[in-house]
Image (cartoon, rainbow, N blue to C red; front, top):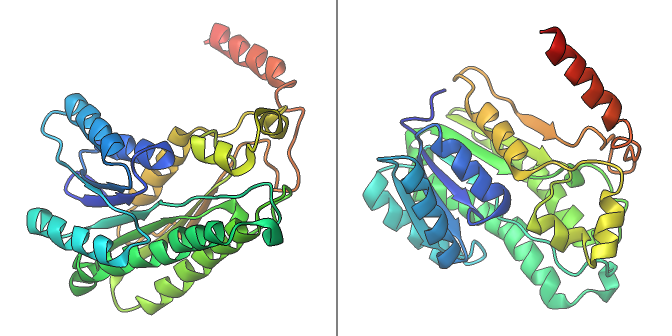
Length: 280
């Protein structure tokens, strides 16, 4: 499917994976609607994209997905300018409180995480289906950025609420897909593994030593890897749905098993690649 004529709403778009997806889809000439809490960061990103891509249409709104009224109003207002939303990329999410175990978390951290990762996920979907006219048209794509954490128990502490919310996103994705039978609306799940972003530093990097220890011996994904996966999923024709896609570092065999010798074997991979280049 060509994204050139598509209007795409991305939540959590101001940085990290959301911003990388915006940059990737700008290359496809999609019309972009970018939602995030930081108006300043959105403005910087919008200016960057429009300077790189002449004629690119970018709309931004500073909105917290936890606030259903604000989110609904933002979508309604945007619709006056773009007429419809073809694609929703549900990307907004956060993790707080690590490495504290569940009983040691602040209640506000629990409320904020579930408010964003669960309520906000559903609020954005509801607004796009209704105010964004996707349900009325019976056509579109909802791409939920979940996590491999939603399917496997994380090996590091402080993950109870985050893991539970990601599992909820997976369940919501599967049920929504079924409930939208009779429409041409695709509902997809993109599951990143370990990604080197500010978000992951916040999630497992309670201090630099802990973060470096976690990343030791392998190369994590970068946000652009996830953006490429999103573009692949969205680029399929009408009759094809990539229902779910895991994109992880090669060394991430599972959340419980990381190949910590991956970097050490890198010299052999590089030597092999150089050998092939010389042969060509």
